[in-house]
Image (cartoon, rainbow, N blue to C red):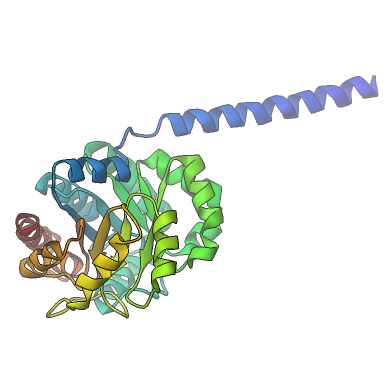
Length: 297
């Protein structure tokens, strides 16, 4: 009798575990049907078009405005959109994005609240959404859980700026299992053999950082970028997208003339949106700049 009860409890646990697995599978299957970053970039290449990839920081000035901003960028014609999750120690970000992250955190913007906002917003967007976050929030949530959750919410990609290539293996494995593409960065100081390894591992596109240092608006884009784009294209046929320091239409045009497959703009849009006197004025300023960049590209 005791053995039967024991077997019964074991069967109940197994049944419960199977049910949870089934629910997990259904949750992933129920994720919004978003375009992948890779398919978007391939389609643009076939049409001989250059990708416009804007970045904004979630929660600055607030999450409702972030949701409206994402949809406005999508309507303007953004091809891929990067959404930054505010973090207290952003190693790769300059003062503008650090300021935006600080303001967002002061308003209690958490990773879970950002994901909830994405879940409500992504189904109304055409452009694939790439989540930009440091590794600590991912680790706290659990790698597999994080990847499955953002996929279910509607994200198509992930960018983790504080992980070197050697430490991305586990992240990439979890991303692939969840159907998320992991975008990797290469910098002006990256030797060409390492550029090749990063490009081979990167999914969607290769993010070429145009400056040595942090993000921020620059008066000019270094002519060295032209050589960096050429160097990368010698070792990969994946799209090369240039970011860090792009804030004006003429800079975007210059980067396109150097052979980049995409132009990424962050700090200038973040400043326009988050440092305005009101959310309404911020949205108008962001929209105006985004349209100028879209037209230039």
